[in-house]
Length: 493
Ligand code: NAD
Image (cartoon, rainbow, N blue to C red; front, side):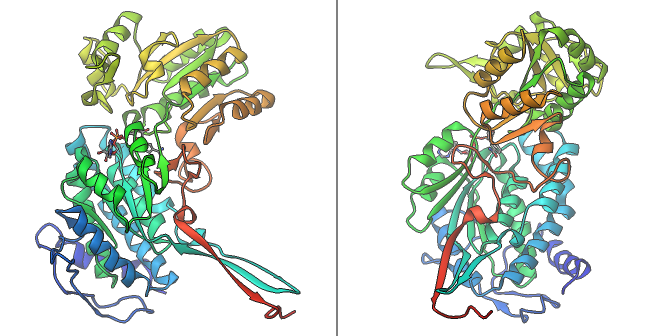
């Protein structure tokens, strides 16, 4: 077995050149490839139009698709163990570049904060499931044997968000390539530089490890047109969509299989049996993480009247800063701009901004390092009903648990994404999970405890397929299941 030290050497030897060199044509695999693969010359990928990308980054979507087709055929020659070795390279590369990718993302998008972004990259590197998820099934009896195996779909078209461009990209690469697929990204235009840069770094690393180039590709300048080319191309049988309602709807309008990870607006219910201090600490811990960019993050809180004041005091005790109604309404006016066709539009410039930046906008002084603002309001406030992705927590008073459930249902807007409850009453917790029907329910904890083993249990994904029902995605969701039946023999006992 090749160990981490060897993988690191391979990765370091080539990745160090990523910013200084152009794409190599005919890349030589380095010394020390996997025991199962001899060193070999990897041919340059030339598309039908004769155009090749730079380390997986293409000018035209058509060329990215052609290169991906060639890479898919090459990749089929590699064993499942090789794929696991490839995944190890991706994990290590992500860990080594976590800080760099995080800083670049922050510089390009202006959203969130570098400290939490580093954690997101490391979480993906460590906890995205690999080939171990693809456990085949078999049956045997007097009529013979049947096996079921996970086979690749082929080329997957993937849309990734601006909120966590590189973590979603590497999580997708790991869980899609585990099943021997290749993947083409149409990154978010607002994060295109860091997405292309990271994809180059990853391509260099895996090519250095003896794998074909272009197993994952992207376009340099993603647009709605390039997304549509990807959506409608006959050689792309599966679409993976991680984003807001617009892109999910657009992908669903194709006749393809879609795995869609759509928006959320996770409500939190706190009842009178809860540990109130813990509830407040959890709301801040989950809701302030990366300035509330996560789709699973706490977005609004409903608190039963008898413990409402205690909860508000606990929020202050835990470091959040309380806003009065006047300041909250001033912020509503800044965050939700009147739309051209009526209604309102979320000001993208304010998504993921820090609590102190948002406080400044409404001339509020807050102590340095404030992670969250919070305010009492009613359920119809736009901060409650819209997925605003900011560290501003609206808190709404409800009469009792029953009224709280109704309020949570309304605020969750049938996204079926994530909901959280703080209670020590098992009957109520069960009822809450039954009624909300969300993909993830977190009980007496904070949101990231529902997505992976750094904070909670199970594996993690950055593509949580809510409208299409796959849930927290893993390699098996990106595979077809094929059965081999042997009639009348091979049962040997
Ligand atoms: P977004 O919807 O603005 O953009 C996502 C991608 O879709 C971008 O690449 C964008 O260019 C593209 N796009 C948008 N409209 C399109 C259309 N009509 N046709 C083709 N492509 C289109 O997303 P964002 O603001 O960057 O990300 C935040 C959203 O993503 C939030 O709603 C969040 O909840 C959601 N999200 C969900 C998950 C999940 O796992 N369920 C994970 C992360 C983010």
